[in-house]
Image 1: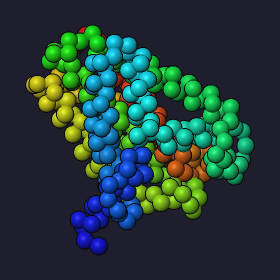
Image 2 (image 1 turned 60 degrees about the vertical axis):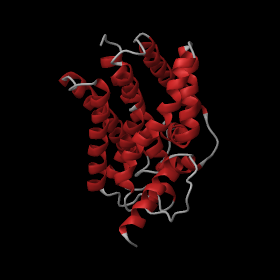
Image 3 (image 1 turned 90 degrees about the vertical axis):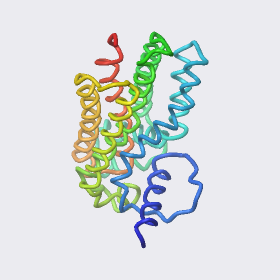
Length: 277
């Protein structure tokens, strides 16, 4: 297979697995470049979500309604499977039982009390973080120089989550010989590292362009801290799965994506978006 076909199949495989967006052309699933494109695809997802959301924020004067609709769009287009992984993980990992039973619970499609509690708590926290970001955007003049900078900074939580998800197959092996986890066996660390570095660099460059001049060092450090927090969320997920299940499944990747997004938003809201710029 020539490189161009391999490139096309790999990036379409990433899009097909990590989103619910219809892939317009036929392709043969190819995981050889999956580690490279998994972080990078988050920037494309952020663009797809940010473009319609800017009209919502400007059209609606209710930040809660805007935040709710943004999360609705995000989950319907990109994150519903990741959220399902978070719920399944809560049911399996918070329940005191054997590794074998946890693997069985992960395959169970029904949601238990642990999943309900974790899901509600997670969405409440994430909703309030997005809402707070929109409130701060509303306090900044739409024609001001920092509005688009702040707006882009908020939506970069999507690539941060994909970087967190990639940390799981980098650190541990699949728990069983089937499913998404097994398909990610042999996840190439070098390609993932390159993809993550390029993703963070492109994110910084987007902010640099929108800021209008060289980003102050403290903004760069906070951006790096937010992405580092997402990486740590993925690493912690891998360690939890290693101890509780013996390896990772597709649900582990989903859990890491969700936690990575949340940690990124926490860092940004706490250290940048809550300050006067």
